[in-house]
Length: 386
Image 1 (tube, rainbow, N blue to C red):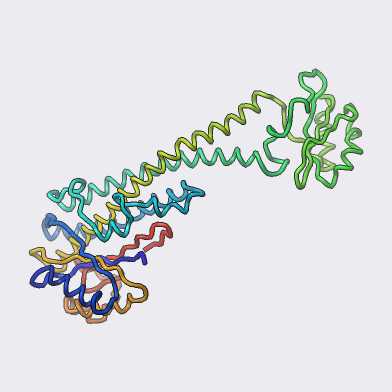
Image 2: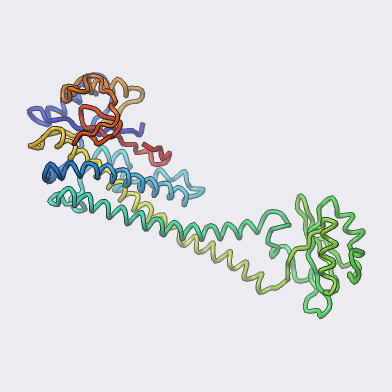
């Protein structure tokens, strides 16, 4: 199970008491889940108006940061290619696996100073993740172009004789070179027409050098033949050859060009290899940055909603719940029995009320419960949309 519930409930006499009541009821007595205290520092509250405005903006920021986090994870999987099975071990947050980071969450005061206003902290995260998103677009575009060029050239090294690069198939001795009158052509002949070619190629036009044709190589469908003829009949030969389904490849033997083509593949492969390491490192580092930022946004949302729901002075306990398989409905019922009294309109069933639009109640989120609730899915490989 990669799904977690981040909830908060108002403090009883103490927050510790809230934690114990909830943990005893859901975990110790009923074994429905594993619970963790979720530590949120004493943040600056600001005014009620600021909190109401911020609540809506944090919802949008939450969605944006999660989207970028998943995008970085997805692209890392793409870059790893045949090592994609190692993706999970490369998706770390602050040098630890994602569930451990989440269950042992500590606010990063150095990055997100708690003396700043809540709005400023949200802006810091927005700017930071926005920059990562922009850099990802630039880096992925450059790497994808390089990979595309290399794949295109590599594709031409294989495949049908009709389209593939001929550089590694032909040799200098297959051609008449530097002749004023004669030229050697490359002709692709269907396998079932080899006999016809050998019997008739000298008669396709006048001025073909007798016995000049040679089979250089063949694949499952075609053979690659040479034929030497006078330059002045080349166009006529191409025309009549096409009528008989013999295809003349547009090819000139040029050692410098052939060497340059081979060098281009080597250069692109080397460039790709050089970029691979730094790109993977950048993606790992910035995945961690984004994931940590995302959990800080969740912490901000819990803080803001808890103050709006439960009032001042700040007195609530944030709890991270890891539901056990097939217990979610029962767990939801138990939580509603515990906290249903917090909101008379919901009763004890915790019904899903659509489009609730009351300050501090989630601004139209489809799942509303009498306690503050946010769902997290830390499965970054399946990219399940929440």
